[in-house]
Image 1 (cartoon, rainbow, N blue to C red):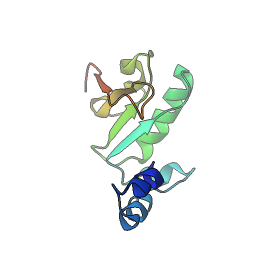
Image 2: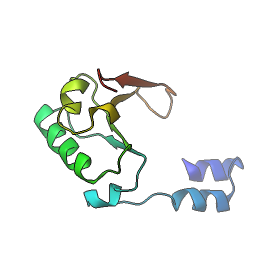
Image 3: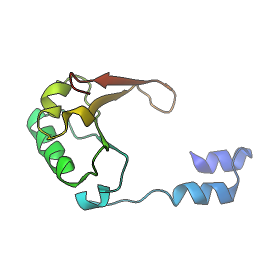
Length: 111
């Protein structure tokens, strides 16, 4: 974490504050309108993911990448719940993410 990095001297306090300032929490989908990449991480239920992607499709800017963090659900089926399947892909983070610096990118048929 950033506090540890500051303590070790590998990050300045100013840089830590700047990085933390880039984060914004929200429960409003509209706040995602200007994002270049949105990563969905709801539980592994296709119906729930389709609802989320329908909402993301409605608010995300054209060309934004809509990524699902699914580990086993069909990315093509998720993509089909949007009007822009070419912008949908899977992102599988290997665990534990803070140790395993590995990310699998899963293309759908139309990505």
